[in-house]
Length: 107
Image 1 (tube, rainbow, N blue to C red):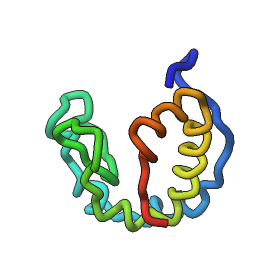
Image 2 (image 1 turned 90 degrees about the vertical axis):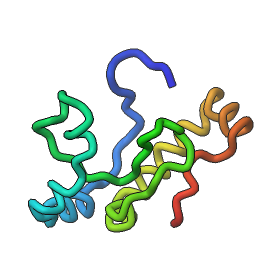
Image 3 (image 1 turned 30 degrees about the vertical axis):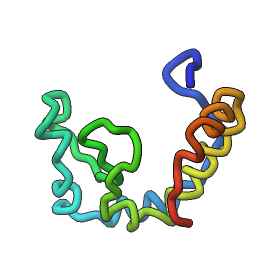
């Protein structure tokens, strides 16, 4: 979706549950997902929690990582909100018509 600027403000979601879960992560859990740090110089000194992986850039059927299940209840409402907003646009409707619903995340 094209828009002016770096971000498109779509609304607000509550992140209290997600924040609590992130705060509970151990140093080992933060260090476990190091794909980006090994592959890209710019990410050498960063940490990330992997949720999905698309190493071959296929952009369909990404590999769902275990942390996605752990954070599911905290992030799913935000994913539904964003998907609903994007799928209601003209371009979004056309994409859904052509390719179907993008996220088939279990609820």
